[in-house]
Image 1 (cartoon, rainbow, N blue to C red):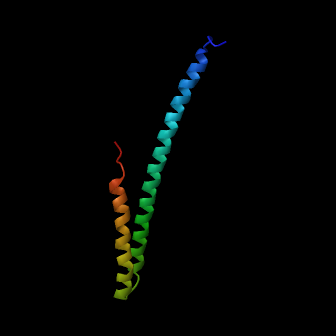
Image 2: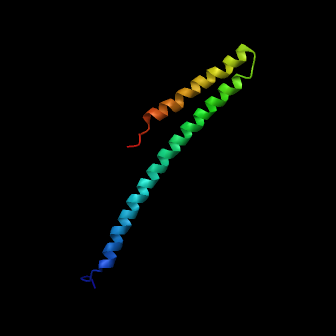
Image 3: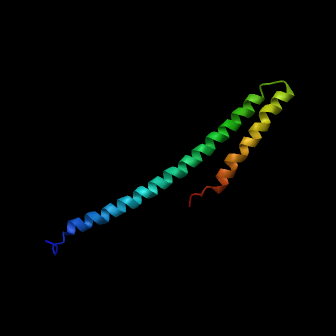
Length: 87
C-alpha cells in the first residue's frame, strides 16, 4: 500500500534525525573535552618536572630538568590557545 502514510512513522523518522544530530554534537563535545584533558595532563607533567628539579642541589641537573619542562610547556599553551572557548 504505497499511498498509506503512517504519522507515527514520520514522527519516528524526525526523532531519529534529531537523535543523530544530538549524538554528533555529543561526539564533538567529547573530542573537545579530550583535548582539554590532554593539555591539562601535559601542564601537570611540566609542574612535576619543576617540582623535581627543586629537589636537586646541582645547578646543571636543575637546568637539565627545567629546559625540557619549558619546551614541554609550549605545546599545551599552543593547544589551549587554539581550542574554542565556552560561550
